[in-house]
Length: 492
Ligand code: HEM
Ligand SMILES: *[C@@H]1O[C@H](CO)[C@@H](O)[C@H](O)[C@H]1NC(C)=O
Ligand SMILES: *[C@@H]1O[C@H](CO)[C@@H](O)[C@H](O)[C@H]1NC(C)=O
Image (cartoon, rainbow, N blue to C red; front, side):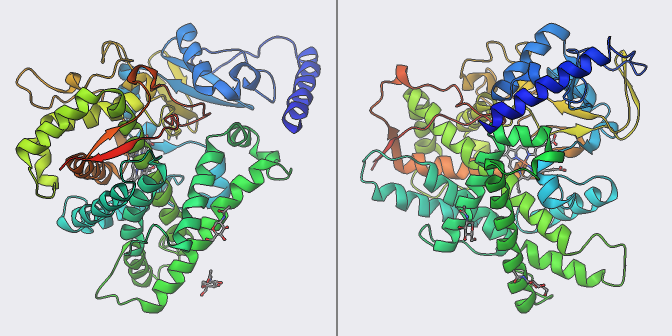
């Protein structure tokens, strides 16, 4: 009801406005072409929040790989296909390194942290997070051991289902969240821990909100939206709850901090805060600590667990691919614990993981960028501070790069000798200066969780493989797999 009235009101407003202001204003900047915007509300009526991505893809067909749409009165340049995305994010990496407007995180994080920040703050936060994650093991042993340990807990939980059908969402979410907890807080939680469960509920609730139509409407009209009641208020509340949780953990860490023996990300940040406490313009303060920690939580949990859950669904649909992975595991790894080193020796499994990431395409719209300077891009002028969407789905499903992109085929990541074949257009983590900082961690998790589980279990379901639907569930932002149940049948 509220939605309908809001939309109706806006339509009326537009009509009045278009009668007043006739004709399209001359565009002196030569922004890329696009659908004609209405004053104030821009292209919202042509975009359909329920089919956001689809609408953008239709504009791509009509206007080509680079086009402009208006959210309200602000232009956003959308870039599609491998060639154009690479030309922007890689060949002009500095100009396209800004972060575009993201209403929800901006509202909660106020521009602090890594994902939503810009300029010097962003450089410092990003560099700090990258080095800290590296010292804690992205590439070193310790984080690998934590993932291996967590994988054993997953095996235990899968075992307890005794071959009955179950939805893996909960267990995978727990396991992946525990890895981030281990990085941030230096501890893992039992899957029954009350505090952990409410934490997960908040994360899921916030993600569900951001993927909903309400989340999108909030992004378009955040100026007014936080003043009006509606379901979005609850969505936002999850984020504030998570923030409070992290603040509690920070306070606890302050009390027990030993600068000579840091236990986790928060400790490292606190030490840096102490080192810079004489510097009044230091970026190392409580707000950036909360912002960065929230970022790691969000960016690092749903993405990885959704990929795993989607991947399992693909393996249920293609049992022959699952069997080939198991053959490779049995042959190369046998009964011992899979380790990160094994990755180089099991190319087929690596290829399947790449294809899972390409096919599932879980961040189809990418994360908004913005230009840090005016730029002449192809035949257009894009002014400084313009929002830019690198549409990652049009890269991962670019038919020039991946023939028959809608087919799930791990072989496209193997050369004729059976070794892993790299693809320049394989960009699930994006590219350029803003490329995901969790790529190494995520890839290690995907590999170790998948191999450890398939070493011990065969995944099956009662639904006929033809009836398993790999197309994503409705969502206004991310791609999510349709919900499903599976059985984990012990292998030995
Ligand atoms: C399969 C798992 C993952 C996928 C598909 C993924 C994907 C992405 C994408 C597409 C971006 C946007 C890059 C851009 O702005 O162009 C991003 C940014 C980011 N990711 Fe990930 N990510 C994953 C896992 C992780 C993990 C595990 C972490 C935490 C350690 C993480 C932390 C971040 C951060 C902090 C950023 C912001 C970087 C910046 O703005 O400078 N991600 N990720
Ligand atoms: C969010 O977490 C807090 C405690 O961490 C909990 O009290 C609250 O119920 C959670 N909210 C939801 C909606 O799950
Ligand atoms: C954390 O500590 C700060 C300052 O020491 C205090 O203002 C704040 O209320 C505390 N927050 C929580 C959640 O304990």
